[in-house]
Amino acid sequence: MRAYRRRGFTLVEEAIVIAIIAILAIPVATLMSQIARNQVYGTEDIKGQYAMNVIMQDIEQRIRRANNGSIAITTGNPYRIAFTYVDANSDGSKKAIQPLYCQYELDDAGTASSVFGRGIGTSASPTLSIFPAGLEPGIAQSFTATLSSSAPYTLSISLVSSTGTSLQKMIYLLNYAQ
Image 1: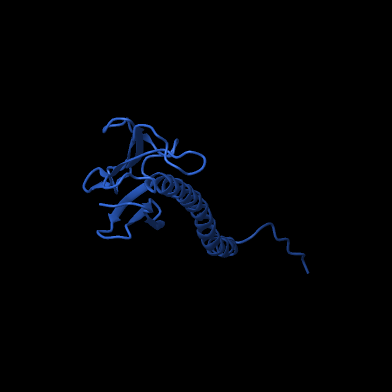
Image 2 (image 1 turned 60 degrees about the vertical axis):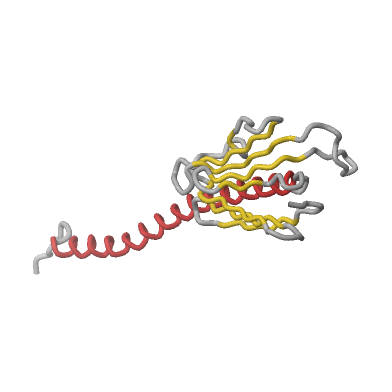
């Protein structure tokens, strides 16, 4: 008998191997794209949470010292909270200086170019700057506040980031009167 030498694979065998590789590659590619998407989403979510925490802590620190009747909430675009307050001494007592005017606002809410700003000054129109420093436009998407109408006065604040993460806080305003 003559020895039969085989020089390669037939076209059908090669087609079967390519089909098997394709069937295995699709789920692997889907998994890899999902992992990459989760890493990007996770980074954006962490940025949003950090920014919202910094904003909320700053508002809480300053608004607790708000002068009686000075809190004003303006709805629309931009959404704004404005008030006057007096800085505190290290023992917690108010300093005997001119009140400071403080303003927080979210301009272009709900868009990719929305910017959260804060302004502190001695006049009723302080220069606003992006807050917290370095915050990218579009991270803060929604900002709302509600002041209770009777004692004990509270301010309920809600912030929503671009990834949908929400932070809500109720701040009790000690020694505040309308």
